[in-house]
Length: 291
Length: 164
Image 1 (spheres, helix red, strand yellow):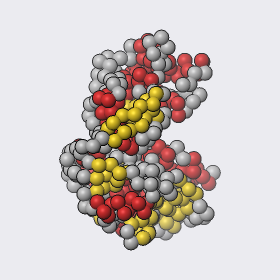
Image 2: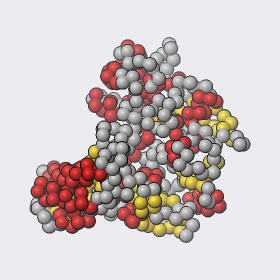
Image 3: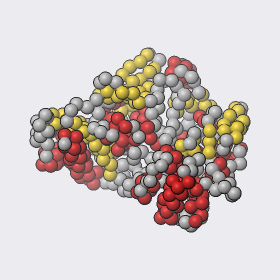
Image 4: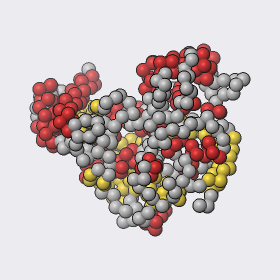
């Protein structure tokens, strides 16, 4: 590999540089995907633009209505953030299965998002929170929902020279909880066979579902929200039987492939079970909070 | 290709190293500075033998560009102790016989050090130790004694109050 490394000091400078050096330039942050792709000769950029020093893209902020995660936030920072230990635990659960500690100390959340791997673990957790991305580019700033941002394997809505600067999501209403579950062939350093994030809100009695968001990874060309399963649960009693039915609907919504890790059929069966478990976990967590 | 001067601190010592911008930190540490304790293997952040501490936190030096760590502080296995004054982790790895071929051990010890330094005074369970070391592989599969050694170092460090 051979390339130039540029280290701009501002977002504007980075965008100008990317435009000038296009199409042979790529942004690099933690580099835990980019350098591997260069080593494997999947990409061959002549210029890498390091975004790790850019101001305004770091840190986790809490606002009146929600949370903001700087694009450069690493997984270790998510894993250890006290505000995510309650209802937002899916974020900690998803962050803690990304690579080993060495990778989590340096890999960024925006890197995982723009890489658009169908098996990305953190993407479903953010999808279940209806996350929105903030983007800066030659045409100015814009915001786009994560569910519209990832288009397919390795493909996103990002225009040339655009940079993701942050991720935002709303605070959860009362009687809500999240959960993230991952199934792999082993328990660490593993690409998901299937992963599921769930965000469940119950009514004031804690008996019926008022809001449900499910996100499934590694079971289609991109992480998906099974809309029929979500819609089915609204107004239903939160119970094992309805969660199992939602799991079946979620499995029907998937489009998995057979690969070295699992067959498509196995993945579909797994989705049904893991969705049910994720919802059950949310229910248990809401019950804990109410106690 | 033209070279650029990289300023880094390695084991407390400042270095000005002419580098090519596509070099990784691993290449600079081994080939330019001569810190041969940092090992090279998978080059994909899968195995952890190249682990060093970047401002105290474990990272894979094999996929980290040297140009991205300008001005920062690196600790390699050579920097945490010496034959007269071993780090508690080095002592307990020797005493527990936690070394077979030895290739993963620098990375294993630095991964463990990063974990223990992040949680000073904590008494991690064996499962927590195993989780913390998950990104560093021992293909001799000598994990049991490695976990023993880290657990023993925790005891020793809590008695002596030593955190370095």
